Length: 185
Image (cartoon, rainbow, N blue to C red; front, side, top):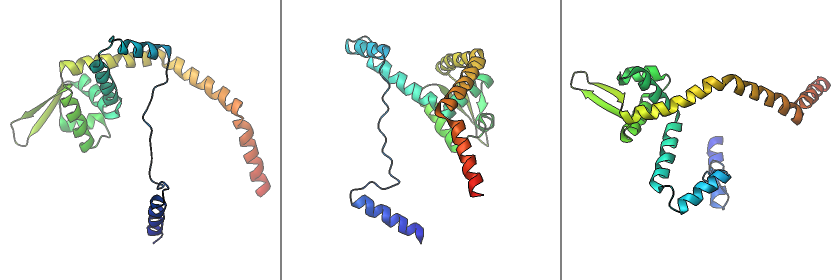
């Protein structure tokens, strides 16, 4: 019953011009402007960078930034030809629906080749295309960078955590909370 009342209240607020609580309005992402970004924008306006290339780069980054695309790319790069069911196990934690969606997107971009074997029960195998292999090689650079710089990043994070927590006074806040607890007990 309470649930119904909340729903009616949300509808009422929405009808009166107020946004419903569940509504989320998101502004499109805009990258921060830097001299390099401004220079690229200027080149684009002067015809230096093909708009199709820019669009493709943004699309590929968005696709590959998806968690499952990167995982599938890595699994196929490591194991070569892999059956669908085994690919799901190697990817770990991906649902069948999400794996299917990811593979279809990768296939439509020419990154993956799907082969349906004419046997019963049907078997489907996937492997990277030369285009997919070249993308995988590009992302191997990120893994190599992470391996080479892991200690430095962890050290920087620890230093930041130490300086930012004292700068914000987190230790003082914790002491105040402990003092309040003692007074209420």
